[in-house]
Image (cartoon, rainbow over all chains, first blue to last red; front, side, top):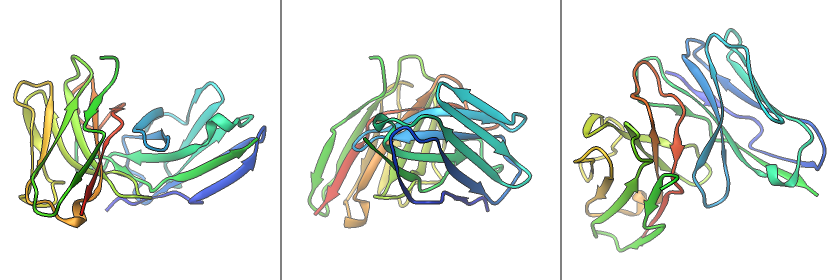
Length: 113
Length: 117
């Protein structure tokens, strides 16, 4: 059964730093992997979706990489800003379902001004 | 509207009451998902609709939970005889494409925070 883990659970860094968030999954047979952002009291916003055939995806200051063989994905945030403070979650579809996602518990990121 | 809309934003229910949570997806979106999110955890899948057809309800925790999307747009999640363990944030998400093979990009509402006393 697919399991998704995100470590650390929380991270606090000064503004301007580059940082990396980690996501690991136990079953390397995945269709894709998504990174989401969740602000307090709000729903989730899809940031990046990497197909299994891709190695990385970029959007602005965000870069997500995927290494299926090692069961890992990283979300790189360049030149962090206080507005980046949020919880970041990753999710993968299980191979035995067309409709579900298996989620990590998220990393709560705080960017200190 | 421009995004997925959920109502009410907050709901407080006494144990044993029935509740109904509403989701207005983005117009024209084929797929609609319901998720349950406990504090500090990732969302847990509840059910999936493709237009008006409920294709997967395997995540519904008990027969007290019921969801419908009769006209393929607005969806309602109903919880009968609420229990304290039902307290959570209920999230709705929609997608413009049918989920065949795997879930694609999702658009989420802000959720309904349900507190059962």
